[in-house]
Image 1 (cartoon, rainbow, N blue to C red):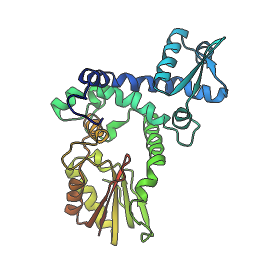
Image 2 (image 1 turned 90 degrees about the vertical axis):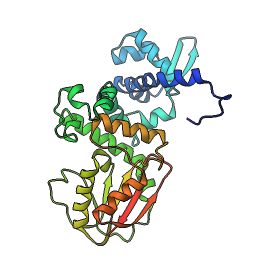
Image 3 (image 1 turned 135 degrees about the vertical axis):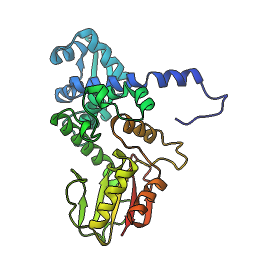
Image 4 (image 1 turned 180 degrees about the horizontal axis):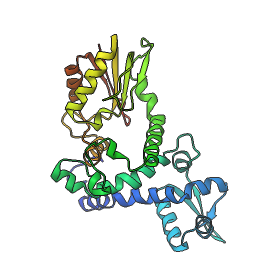
Length: 301
């Protein structure tokens, strides 16, 4: 949010907006979880709150309020007719919130609603203790912070599907940040890379990976990548970059808080990632801010 002068700023309104932010998120998550957007897409016509409630097995009172809140968020539109209020999806809901859409963000919504949301209840504890809150939130041992991120294989698959859906939106911006045509052998690194061997390649892509780990683990992984990397090759980091003074962007600051409650990592500045790359042996480091969700950092061997 861009702040104006003291005279222009409505401080009470700003505070009220901030305090209700989680309510906005949960309305959208709930509509996704109950299948509101999918039903309206499949119906192909506007439906009443009674009809939606009946088909989805909810109370009529609760559904009407949920639908009206979605109208306020511009996720639905409403038309008043002689038969009553009729609801339909907006374009943004059809594209991003229905399961069948190629650009669907449904899975990441469910991961945020059922996992991230619960972890953030313990944000104050995470700040006090400086560690993730999986053990407190779910009774899961946090000895392996990354392994503790999933309570079940189903949850892991939802998270992975969610990450793939985000990549479908942001991937083109990141991959076009640099001319990668000279690299013929590219490895998108994933899995248990700390224990498994890393295949030889010209370019390694570490997408939203280093932000899960502390500096020591990042240096350990990057050193391993450097040793496997062919001469003249490199590594492409895909991360959300903080400003050098860490004044923003707000989304990245919030992601960093999420790393606190869920992992042992954090979001970093371009200079901090460059320092990690240099410590592992990489040089000729270039940084491209895409102006979108994720940025790119390229280091060469």
